[in-house]
Length: 89
Image 1 (cartoon, rainbow, N blue to C red):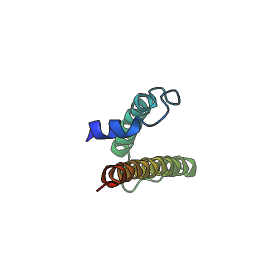
Image 2 (image 1 turned 60 degrees about the horizontal axis):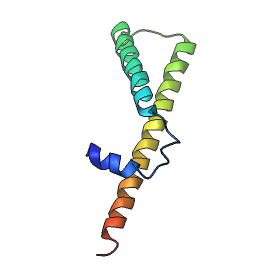
Image 3 (image 1 turned 60 degrees about the vertical axis):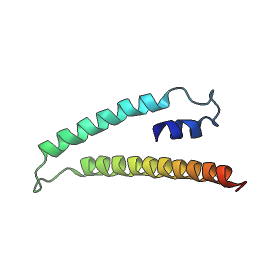
Image 4 (image 1 turned 135 degrees about the vertical axis):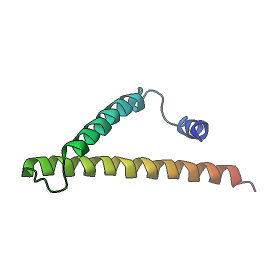
């Protein structure tokens, strides 16, 4: 599947992007590590300061927005490829 996704992304301007995926994966590893640490530090009955709750809420919202965007873009690319493949059928 990864080869197919690489094929699909070849249409994008190669000068527009410069290994942002690698950078994003590094940052996401940090997010996962921080989330795991927080999960281990928190008990269900713990209270958090409002600023901490707000930071977690924003992080979740931002990551969820990017995930939705990336999933939507991937689905659009797949749909376009299938339309191209089957246009002459």
